[in-house]
Image 1 (cartoon, rainbow, N blue to C red):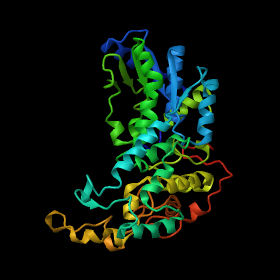
Image 2 (image 1 turned 90 degrees about the horizontal axis):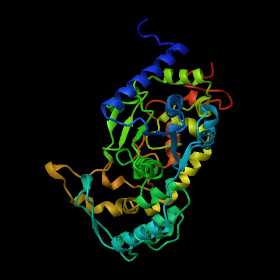
Image 3 (image 1 turned 135 degrees about the horizontal axis):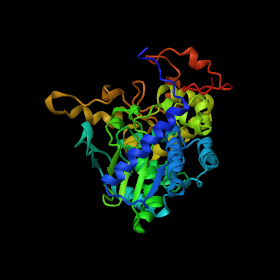
Image 4 (image 1 turned 180 degrees about the vertical axis):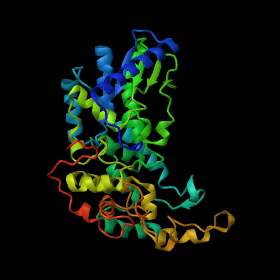
Length: 414
């Protein structure tokens, strides 16, 4: 019985809210934060941020405001939910902000490529550090001639990779795609620039900095829960924010709550959660991103294939802005020099464990390396996501997914 799931009843929620109120008061005294401080809730339209926004309004009413950063890679139901959640909570409408990349930023990137891509360049990091790559602005070299076959395979008509890159370096109107074009790649596991640029920084600039500039003390509430990951479990429940240690603080009110607790609060306050939770989603936010699981990808492909098609269309543009993809797209001809280059301790150069003479990269993959595929396209990843463990045999459960019925990983359909 000790391992049985705990059933949360309404009285438990009132107790949990009381604990948050008591703990928060203690933190305010400990950090000497004035009673008239401002509260900004980081809102994502997910279950945890909705719970956090509800508690903040319940305890502090109009002193709490909600801000959401729209990455332009959200599901339309998520944006719709964010725009209407104030009617359920009773608070002011969520302030939705978005990072917009300007023509000047793209022009700066274009000038950078025009200055650097004609030159032979050394790789600065990773196992290829120090290796010299050929010019991407010449069509009269062996590499340039080989790249012409890449252009034919991709269905683009450019003389050089540089020309191809310059053709896509213009604002698209979509923040997520623009960020990827400017970085020359999609966000990666260890380089999630989308979080920094499209969420954290824009929310700070649009909602928090103006309050700080007015002399306000701000406490940022976030719906981070410890059981989501070992990293999040290590976060302090209350802390000073490094961006302004004297006036900006962070509070994690539901840090020790479970997903069961979160949905119990929804029920307690009569709040209908984001509808994606009854359509198979285990989380909401970017639809999808580099950390999406196999199940999430297959679910997206079955229920919302237009998002997969959108990501694949983005891949066709971002690969043109990727120096690495251009270099590696011509296979053995671009990598022949690697055979003469030895790493320390006698190790030969390898790509994802494969010998250089069989490696060819055609994509800056939206989902990153998956299923022992070095740089698969979104379409390749979807096919892999439909398989069972091992990635070779199709999973019949995934293949027969009925998208017309309620599906919830949290028991919301029961």
